[in-house]
Image (cartoon, rainbow, N blue to C red; front, side, top):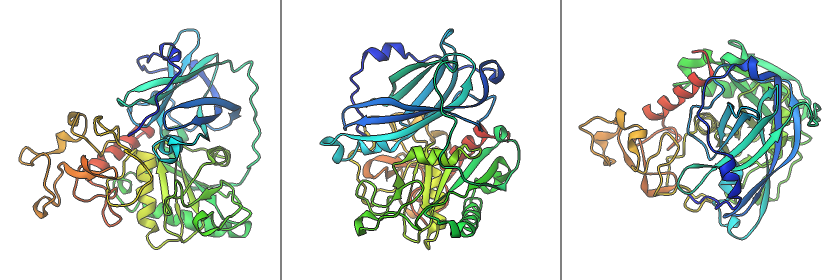
Length: 427
């Protein structure tokens, strides 16, 4: 996978990684959320960050005891440190469309800007916020740092996208559960009943399949009735344009089925109406498509005949950090996975550091790599092909939910999802 070559080398020494340790929430944080609205700009080889605004939001939904992200996932990470003592207070890993775009051919000749949002509990004193990006070797390198004083900065408490929120299923306090939020996209004011029913049906899809089925009590589920002017979504390749609340579209990076929104700021404005850890954007269309970025959002069509498979698959991306295991469909990316680096995703390997993946789940009798033969159909192994390429990247099973629409999550993906559920919840 191509990664930017960062030019702000002087920042690297300022952002050395500090070991994580358990921190007392009440010692360091007040109620509420400090939200930084950011602008990413760059090309395939360079990138830069800038703050476009600071907001104070009401709802922090995460754990009060697990403030340090334990997963070495994502293309980015941000850390929050106490400015005086340099104590690590909070960290979070995630992916962005900006990083995906940097692997496309367009990024080799064009400079573009993307908005993004990072959120963390409201600090009691000045903090240093650091953003890390993965380099070509797969290591997190600090690329941006800023000191923020909660008593002196101007924070906007307003929100121009205020909508009614609805509790669909509440199983406990927000800090003890995975708070999953459905957002309405492309639903007009007279279609909110349809959105609620579509949300309930999508909830049914997710919790009809393991490991979610057995861990349903670990989740709280809510929905925001975010009204759009128009029904549907943009389909640029067909000249169809709609006025919708979070500005979604098909044909992301030129791929028809890839539906996303580049307007993450509006997504977070809508989501800020209630508690959330994970966002699912439900789009009022029957056209096949969707997308999912780890710890950013999942998005899919509400009414396609294979919506069940897509809803579950995309949630695997956004919640579990699971990678696509297919290699026979067109994508916009160039060398998305660097074959000389072990992928961070828990369900792919280049065999460079297989000990860190699912080697413990492969029996001694199973050959590595494993032939894609019928006798290994139900066997956890190492099967070549995944991450959009047929050679050099390996997946755990011949078939899996992250490989085709007809499968379920394999044991390796299921284990990764269970680990994520345990991180967020009290189960």
